[in-house]
Image: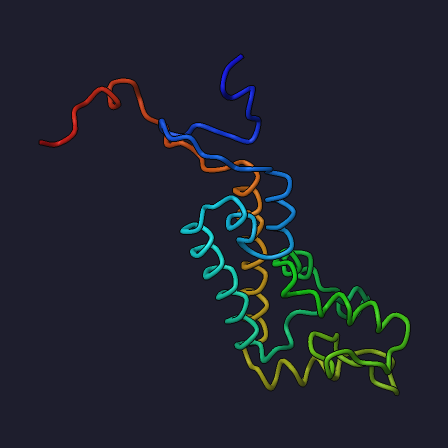
Length: 184
């Protein structure tokens, strides 16, 4: 029985043994919070880098979009195709899920003073077009740019989640290159 078979969560990359601990726990932690799975695995340098990149991009998008770019809305007037990507950031996007859940039951009730809530409906037209137009006007291109940043942060975290599960990928090297001596 090889070492790989006896320890299913250990991989060998470029002659280095990497212990991924329990990769399913690491994946679950990475889904909840960016880089938490890497902290669990003890890959701290990667964890710091991934957390800074994903959370920094998400936070920058929220700032540029004036805190209004992450919300769950699946109405015909405002279908947020970007939202599934944004929610991949994990717990930082949790208020939007709570707002959507509360809003479905009682549209007048707000959680956290309406942070990450969808735009309110106009009492006359029963749509949110007026509020969305005002948000776009106030933020100018910042609304779309903030939406893009937060969406890319979620997609980047998807790669982080996959890395927590599968571990680092070895660089392909030919046998000839491996036998080449290092520079003296």
